[in-house]
Image (cartoon, rainbow, N blue to C red; front, side, top):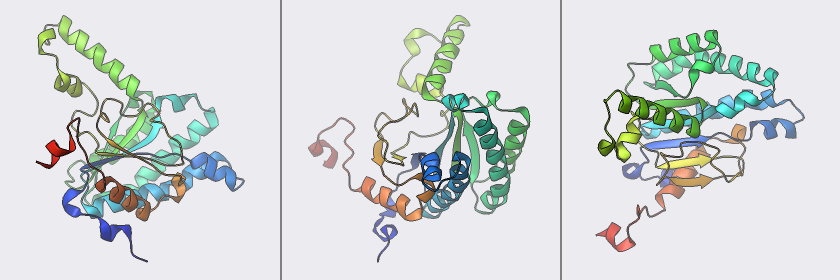
Length: 248
């Protein structure tokens, strides 16, 4: 059986892929285990997606790892997730460095436990000079939080006369977001069969191709990513234009 990888046109790869990693809890429940068991097994899928993206030559991979709303989950689960996050990143950092992968984060990381934030920053620093795939972890992130913070900063800069109303356009707003150094994603994948965006990159996905799969995140492997890319490449991206305009 041939791989979807063989069908991928390397000349038309999405530069930036974003993934809503959903289904860890349901995967664990199906096996009669606690939710954290699903999160632990989801780490393998993070590794598979990262390796596959890096091997193909994708420039940016953004993973929705922890939302601002996730802080409302039971304290035991949040604590276990924070511990798993740090352990996973520390364990994977040598591999990221070896594969020239740069790690960065977006989100309100000031809410994270001090020790977690410190160890996370150490991992970020160790990969800061890598020039291959940029792995973006969305931690304590939500789009409404991000846009609210952008508006606050724009208002303050206006008060300080660093920003004038007539200067504000779409690029201005984009430059006040946490993703200002990152291109908008061309492809957004959501696993587990849910059809919603869950407060993720709402500004940035205005023209992103959306791909939904029933696969639960711990079962998501390289072949699933290849399949999503093949599906993406089968689409015509018009950005508001007609088909005739796009093909001219």
